[in-house]
Image 1 (cartoon, rainbow, N blue to C red):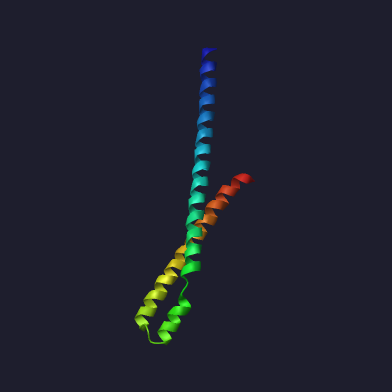
Image 2: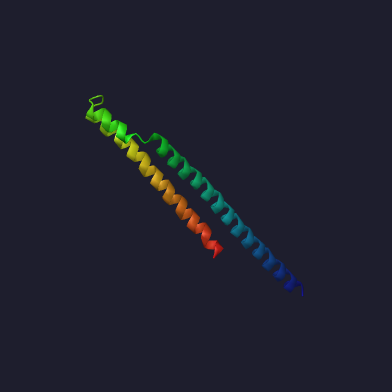
Length: 103
């Protein structure tokens, strides 16, 4: 009888531990998804405001900047575009993982 009580209590403890691990994983995933969304949104806003490729082209054509300056500036711009795309991808992957649990 005593052994059955101990086994029962151990099973309950294991179940509670499993639930706590699941909850912590889900909460961490939710928080990570929110952080990634914030990062992706910040990149989108920055790109909307800072897109100056047309101005760079005009400055190059007018001789106001050198080809080297143009290439460097365009390179920086596309680096930000790439970072924005990576942030959006990471957010969507995390969100898809989070939405798995809704099914």
